[in-house]
Length: 312
Image 1 (cartoon, rainbow, N blue to C red):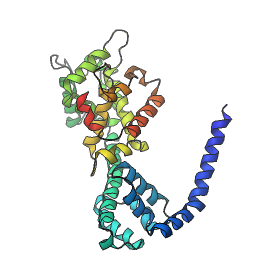
Image 2: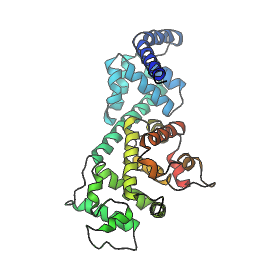
Image 3: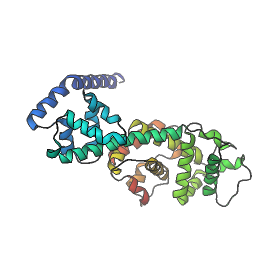
């Protein structure tokens, strides 16, 4: 039983290698003769704006044998306009006859570079360790407590009270080792913008039998969002929902969606929450399965996904 999937994967890899090395070039040549347009022109003219077009452009550029085209997926925002001009020069595309192409290609390259920059921004924040000697870090942590527990004051900075909101010990700084400040920033963002929902989820986490550590699960949801971003599973969503350059705010909204999905579903909830029947408590033992389900969800329903959050 185990040999069949391996054989299929080997055949798929072999076919991909043969196609990219030999067949793809001939197919592109034939299509250019028949249509009079290069592959980039065909993608921009044939695919609707958003993920379909941007994915097609990205795929074409990555597989190109031309160094100028291949490097186009790595240019920064300030280099996009010049890069488009260089590509049109390399492919001998006349701007006056292809005005829409230049604009469409520029939008695609902005989205591609924007996604890569977003990942770098998120990664840089993740790499910042929580520092108890840093006043800004401490203020963020205290803010989290005040947002979740507005009617209870902390008796001390190091106290068992932190366990009430789901930290493992009397000093939360040790729980941020994996995700760094990114984990704390996400927890604060959710608690600030969706205070009532955050307290509702915190209340559910204190269930005597089905309870879980709210803060720890929140940090693990940050890891899930980060993993989706790093793997490229969120590309379709961002290419569809963000016409320009995504920023850290858009990443926080993905985290919001994952947090809100942990609220128990009922008949009044829409498709978004109904997709997530796995509870945060199960996240630890089903991490890979849940990550796969979430990535498939983002690929299947990429359009305006962030806007659905407000209806949960």
